Amino acid sequence: MSTALLDTTIDHHRDDAHGPPIANRPSAVLLDEIESNAATSDRNGTLVRSYDRMVADGLFHLLVPTDLGGASATVTEWFDTAVDVATADPSAGWLLAQGAAQTAWIAVAGSDDLVGEFFTTRHTLASTAAGDVTAEHRGDHYRLTNARWAYASGSSGATYLGGAVRTIAPDGAPETRMMLVPAEQATIRPTWDTLGLRGTASNHIDFGDTVDIPLERTFTWPRLTVRRAGPLACAISHTGWMITLSAAAVNIGAARRSIRAALDSAVTKKHRFDTIPLLQQSTFVRGIAELESRLELATSGLRALLDHLWDRALAGHGPDLETRARLRLAATASIDLTADIVQQSQALVGADALHRSHVLERLGRDSQMLRHHVAASPSTREQLARILLDSYDGPTSFI
Image (tube, rainbow, N blue to C red):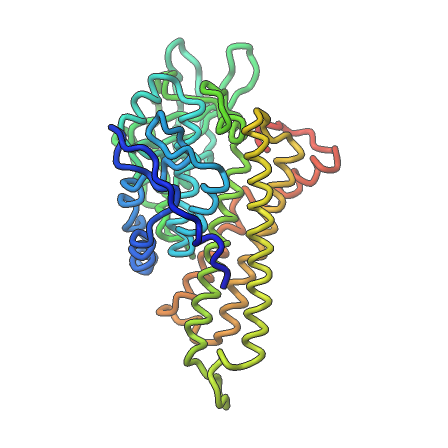
């Protein structure tokens, strides 16, 4: 099994009022804790038990600049960390990938008031665009009507909740903005009862029939209006690619874990009429070789694209429309490829892998979930392909 992602030296970043130092990769102790708790969260359908520990260790602030208490990690380091955490538990990996991305959005696009409020300590945001909410701009605030959304991952652990709304910009043009409230000012409805990723607590959130949100607690989204320039802003001002890459990182982690689980089972597993364990059988070894090669391809390709994106961001250039489309298409292919790796790992082990007590059973359910995420849906893939065919006529901010 490839260990390339596990060999990175851990770098620690500054210790200040924001909290203890942040490592650019999770500790082995934390990963063991996440892995040991994964089955419980899956069984109960509740938020991963290590959520608060992940917050305390600064994982949700990886991308945030050091002057705001973060680690100033690169986008590749963010991706690698999400893979590491997802290898321990895909639900935790999704929360980390999305939570760190959303915290970075605030660092880049949040008002001075919001940034001062949010980064006084290690707050977290659970935001979603899965709603049909409109907002009217009224001077120093927005008035929202029927402010309800689905799929707010991490909602029961986050200190802030956010929902995307449709509104009108000062120049009269349509605009989409993200609206934030402290979590205690909203209602979280425990609706998340799904096949997989059960530990993400991706519940419905409800701000109320009518609610006023101060202008300072909003920012444009999915195209961020940059308030703090720098490499991070160049890289992530178009947020859509981060969502698709989050899904890819989770499934890569699930695939990596599934190969490990298959190898663990193969030490003693024998199919009927076998005289030697699976691990000694050529068919199994060749199957593992095939899965490892596919996993390496899926991982290395995305990491190379992210390295290139970050190098250009360091030079002051953000990813253009075609680059974002190609990156997201590569990520969607990776999501499918790695979900298949999990299924093939199950097939190598056989019926044991379908028992509730076997980790491969859970990984099979988890890895199917993100194939159905809107960021990887067939309609999204069609839109991305139309960009390459020069026939896309939709809003570029959503790419």
